[in-house]
Length: 475
Image 1 (cartoon, one colour):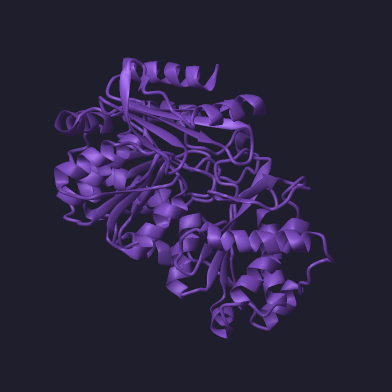
Image 2 (tube, rainbow, N blue to C red):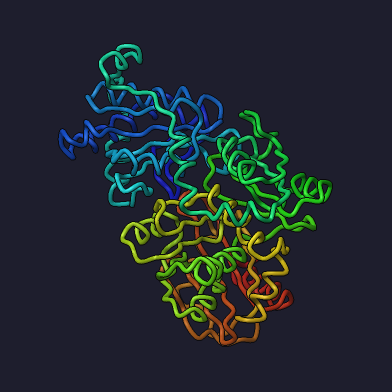
């Protein structure tokens, strides 16, 4: 069993190898001590606990509650599998001291994880998680962590079972113009990928008068044998069903309901990066919302171009939605987005929400006479310029990764025949080229892997940047 280590989306591990009841108990004890240190008021305000649809997730969630209860920290345990954004909303609604979601996100079925959120509803920042993981790893080597039976904890009022779904769905009505969707109306296919967002999107859209077809809306801890990631490769069945149903839109959510995926009416995948530009323009020009815009360093500069056109400021953060969430929590941002299918808006939670993102996609096309997303995107490109993006992950020998890291200490002066005009080291090494295109290299902190992100105005230039990036890697 390895040590507990938080990444950009919490702690994750392979079930029964790294992610064990022993490790979960140790982490739960450390989280309880973190809450305990906030004072008696925090212990009474308690911790919201949710879980996804993975193998044993509800058992791990109950384990967290029992360990917290043994410390006198109240646990609000969700009755059914709960999307991460719903748990985040419940933290804010109850003014809870923290939140724990047992979820593996978009990782393969054999993995599970724990996401820890602070009282602000967003994922905890490194200064908090480092302290918690250090304490948890110390506990791993000690005696068994104390817990009390669920029945006793419930009788003493230390565990309370809750269902946050209805309050969350009610809140969505203040964020989405359901009347616009109702006036369309739309034919939609939804794929929750066997995850915990089942019963959310379909309920809202049916109530808004949409004709809805739902795929994979039952629990399968194996997720059909594939990772529940709403990527183009994973959404081929959704694409087929959209065309088969003559639907206007295909909507997908990942395993824990925080990342979105979109399929256009002709069955083509819509890059999350591209949709971020569309929804920003819609929120400002159609809905009249105002504020700055946040994006991660790996996210499309289409947001920058739209923001300039609208007179808005852009704020760039490291990769990991917790950094965008911190900016959202401070106020002043109308929207925050990241390239991997993450979206947050003002007036909601400082956390990505795929359910809201998908509803906004429906609102966008409904407001434009059921136009195709790609048609709207071409219209946007005509106004602000074309931005095409691509990400490639390379699993490499450690020696190759180390050599690249050394090489990037002094990046080249030109890439693919274009001058490098700026080098951004906010998170990885990002080289901005003279024509506005860019490459970003990010080295994994947990395994010998390099992520290459590229953006350009044409498909040809995009692939030239990929080739140039691979040459720098040494492939």
